[in-house]
Length: 449
Image (cartoon, rainbow, N blue to C red; front, side):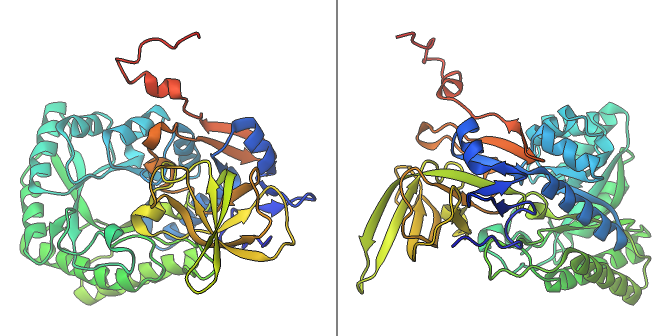
């Protein structure tokens, strides 16, 4: 009950002499007192270390640049950290682009995605001299070319392909099968036609191809099939159009451990396997090896973050067959972590404010929202003496939790606090109800009563 698996928890996670969880030298009890709960707690050293390791591993495998996934979680602080560690950033909206630019990230270190980029977003990317814009449709070609021509620049672009490969992951986050909104089809010839159109436009500079096969990927088998199909496209482009594919961005979606049973590949091993796969396919097709780029996704920030909750009520419920499940309600829920409800995501949770020698009991950690599906951890073993006022901490919530957070039931979104060397720094302050009222023209001034 008191164990902290190093495969799941941030690298600095430990239990102190009181049995309380510490992250980055900070006792979660102190964090809860100083910043309230729920609160996202980030291990800065862990995040920076993962960024360095991914960059080194993938550069060794032939990568030109490794991009941090803004959609996983982005603030100006995070943008500065990952840029300082040598990463680029891939953004998927004008808002994410604005945050990266506000943080001082050079435009050439950015890559812009999006299946329905607005003209305003494209113009902002062109104005910022974004290093790569990923073309996702024929409409994209026209819009980006127009914006670049008006700006008087030549914009480097990649063509995103759908290669008919689906990663072994949840169907809602597998993004490379043909029947989906992203990219241009390989099987229909749309990808080659996109290259043909781009090559005729003087304001666009075709740099290469992009492929993304899914998320939470634990092995390189999907990349092997995808790489074979992408390299085959590159070979046809060379043979039929005389255009060399200089760069190949294979996306990413590298998985992390949420549970003890999860077993993702070691970072250098995954990088070398993918690099070897591309090299062999290029040799087989007789074309030069392109420069590679990668977007690891959640793997950099996901394990570095945890969420601290306070227990409010504990309710035993008898199950069919005579068992008992303890419903442990916390002061957050689907507004700060929608992934359990959305994807049936699984997490590891521990009693964090103290150690316990009580017998384990089957628990369901649930939120405070007016929804029966408001579940944080569906099945967990916690000490049977868990009680109101205790703190629970859920591991591996650095990615896609705060970034997908909502104000459902008018709950203000939690603070994000960074921990390093026993010191705390606010990354995002906690929202207040007054913050929400500022968006409502009918709310009027705050009452003094």
